[in-house]
Length: 188
Image (tube, rainbow, N blue to C red; front, top):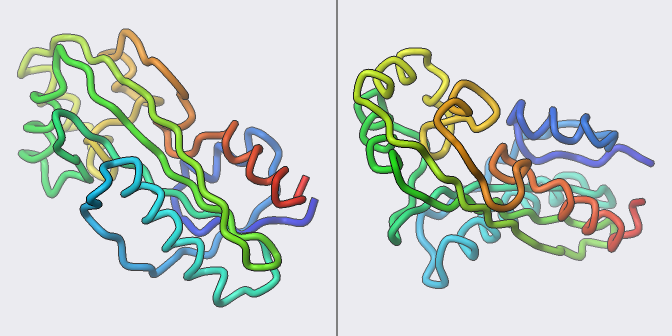
């Protein structure tokens, strides 16, 4: 299989592609992300993934390009990466003892320029957390570059008794859906 182009600098997405043996090179996208979509979080994640993939595909015609975007949401509110430690603590307080959803949208641009999209939505259940636990977790720095201010594959796993859906999607790339799009594009 010829290496695809991953339109993301995310180390987590790179690790996930390596996990399933998909060869890739990284070309970070400079596409401008939108913050809202009238059709909700799933459409938002897909649209941002599409923008990223198409921006990179424009610079690399004839190559297969994969873009992705992860959106965390609860009660109609979308949570991005925290601005600072106080913002991270506030997000985690909202999630504590409750369920929220994570959707990762993907877009795959084929060699012929066709763009296919998909997404996976997963429910994440957080345990009750004491303020001291939240503060100590945020102090590790782990939440600072993550949508929703946590890493399910990292230290936050200690606060997550259950997820319902795709674990890899919460990490940042729904692997089943990626393979399905790669097959549809004739790349596998």
